[in-house]
Length: 383
Image (cartoon, rainbow, N blue to C red; front, side, top):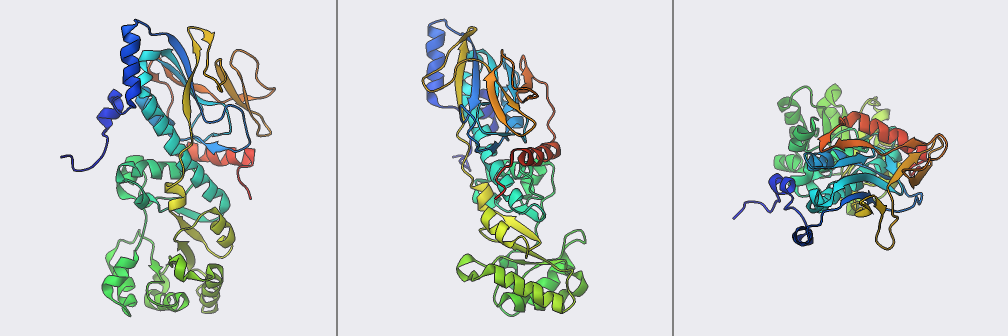
């Protein structure tokens, strides 16, 4: 018996991580000696609708399709879209048919997470916002969560192994479990021992809501750690939180009154964009978990739009090879690729693979910068 219920990378690469009907399709087309050259496009919405989402997962999509007899164009990671194709494949249909399931999963899941991360980022643009959501998903996709969160503009991640995959160092200080292990009334011992044990590069962030009133524990932490204390974190469960904004204002007041204006307030626990907007003027940083990691995947579909050079599509889909454009004022436009696009429109579908070879580099920091710039340009969820 396998130790974990995980579909491994070998199955993804060889195309057996697929829906069974694609294998039946291969059998049928080979039986008929039929393998047309097609153009297939990945889309969520046919026409722009003003509801922008953030594209992620393109790096993994390129790795999936590498080595196949196909040309692929795609939008760059960190671009926002609200209609039309985000990726286009051209080649013999049987060269990529069985990879549709994995391709859509790679793009759909990552894009949903990245979109939610960008929502959080835009809700508190001047605050530190960290990804705390890896614990809500299967560990096999933790790196997908953390990379997508960073692409959406979050400042850091918490998952150690995922950080090793994406080339980022995980952060984090202490859970309630640490303080509970020291026992009720001994929070000072927990904070001091943490300060003694961990390396100097780790920020001194004291968790201050384990047993007693938040203000009480914060002031005790300040007394215990003195000038070494960088910030305090409040993670009070929602059922006991009361008016969280009022609690934070009270903590800030008491810290300032005692000359500790340099101690930051960091909050976490079930927070989403609405909470970040409400609290961003009274907290310095946030940990966001389920809103990002549990985001709904983008509902992408892959559809053939051209067969052997002729337009073709199922009902409800738009036939013909397309290009999408971003205009200077932030508009997103869809047009047939063979026709002129909007005046001053920037074509967004760019070469990703040529004859199965990846022709693009991937830079996570550049993608995150692109996402924030594009979000500003299109007015992404500014409320």
